[in-house]
Length: 433
Image (cartoon, rainbow, N blue to C red; front, side, top):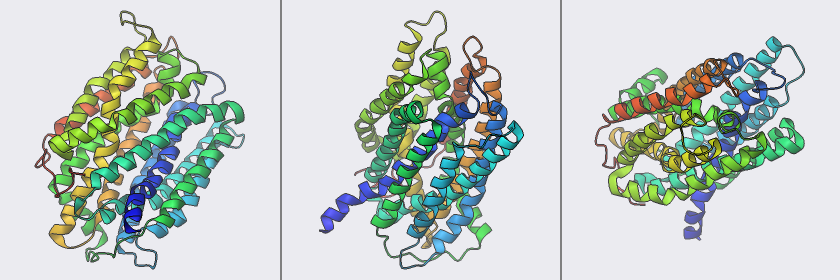
């Protein structure tokens, strides 16, 4: 019975990543396109939508540390983390659904509506997902099996992305954006509640006696975490812009119809999933940090190629060029999905072993604070770039997005070269399973 529970634990834990990725990926793929389509009725200018997304991300960033401080100290019969999932999941699902059913209104009123809904969504997201993320070091003491569970988590995340990629265009075509939002929101709620019901937390470690601000500065003083989070913030800035422009890339640069978005994104999902075994072998060979360094280098080389899709002199049709890039991007995308979660868990547990105090959620919170600030900047910049051209015959801004994104990724690689002990595990067992 114990062995069965152990085998089930990765699947149950990874269900949370599945639900969260469905919510976020749907927003990344469709929110700007829904409110500011390249043709047809525009509800909001793209710059306004970018600012609304930035506002939501700022709320996400600012709410993460207080939630983490509370979660690390909570003592209840249900544990430190699970109560947050139980309460936060319905709130985040409700806000998600509201995003796709705006009332008829003028652009300024619509902008205010979108801003309020996104602020509610991202606050609830922090309330739910920061404690969820902090469960990873809790349920993998000593790092044993951590990369394996992080791979399950990443597989579930890419699975959620894949479901959205394949199903959302069909749902939109047959029921509209409101039906799509209700279906995705209900599915995400079910998976997050599954984690709350199915995971049993270990006995809590000693509570940190630090005050709130002192705990944040303590996390930022960790040299390994500082290098890691600066690198990841740069990476996040670049990849967030590229991810948010994917539907535009397919419909404008690859010159395919909106009905084919699911097929293109489904191919991305399959190729990325197929790259996971290669990633596992690479991680065992050179360690989690070494594999992340390789991933950053590969991503820096692939991302700028997106800007050349459909240009004269490039071999193949625009559609063929896009599909070729999907194959090239599969391994780097797999690495970006798996490795950061495993590495920050290593860093957080190494700090706990040094100090004897549990601050795992605060590590994820400070990471979230910085990454959401980066995402806010990326969202605002995305809107500015799209305003320079996001349609056939006027695609300058759309082509600039992957170039700017690749520059951010290259800077992330240069920053990560300073990571202490890159290529060696911080904890025994983190690269062996």
